[in-house]
Image (cartoon, rainbow, N blue to C red; front, side, top):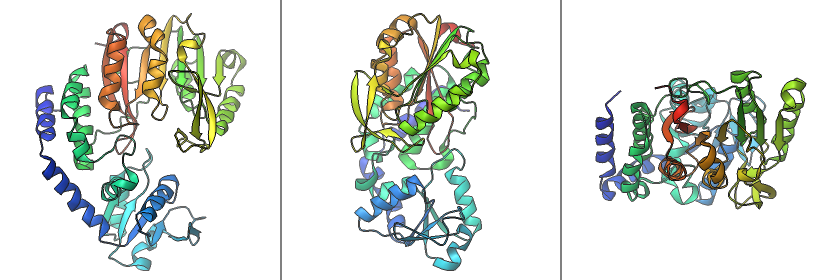
Length: 392
């Protein structure tokens, strides 16, 4: 791993690039995407989102390629679905395949290798297509065009000073270099450590209260219990999606009584004020708070929840772009209790530097770590670690 100073030099050089050079790079790659019949690899949520965006740009992909047997040979939104192994035989060698999956189960580089082995000559990621059709797709989570990033160079460079260890600064720099270039070889590797990176966080106290914001179906409650067993004080789990909330409730109800009795579930999201917001209730991990949502959900402030008696507090925030608002709604807890915080830092373009900076303003007694728990630039987590929980 390069030294901290060398990593910062790379970042300074990258963020000093001229706008004309950045735009030329985008245009060169975009032309490659535009100048071929498109096949979408993955007919799931992101595949349908890509299809909708391309159609709004006047582009109709010629097919989906999907591994799901039940989808093959059918039409989805009027587009035929073929098996990946049959793509070149049925559609020819001049196609370009856009990988419309961003999942921890299959990275873009792995998908590219699969498709290359099947004889596909041109393979692009959804992010490449997003550059080519930026008006339809960007910003998407943390991704935006390079010239937008370069306009924030001073903030990005200042954000580099927030990180405590060399691993964090290296990851920070490489995630940003990836966003500027879409060179997937630059990305930090998924460490598969979940929310308990052993090299930077000491063991949690037995009296810890876990606050799970974005609890989904109970997956991170399960992870917490696997880590702590019954050595915890209480769990507060927040999930606004109705279907996910029912799954969360069912999971908790099936636990042994001496565990489930200490878990409180809330059908709500978290933010900086009480009220209702629009929500896109997908019933899966893609559920999100959005202006286009069709469901109204309750929002609560963590400072209003009765968790003041906690001797040790661990807050996990994965709330689809409401991380900043959720932090502000927990201002009192953060200022007075200095909880350990695991914070998703990839839902908005500026989150990677703005969220740790906000936390430092709320409480100076933190050290910040950055770790990657996913693929293709996703599941990037900022850990705000109290001094007493540092391992070194």
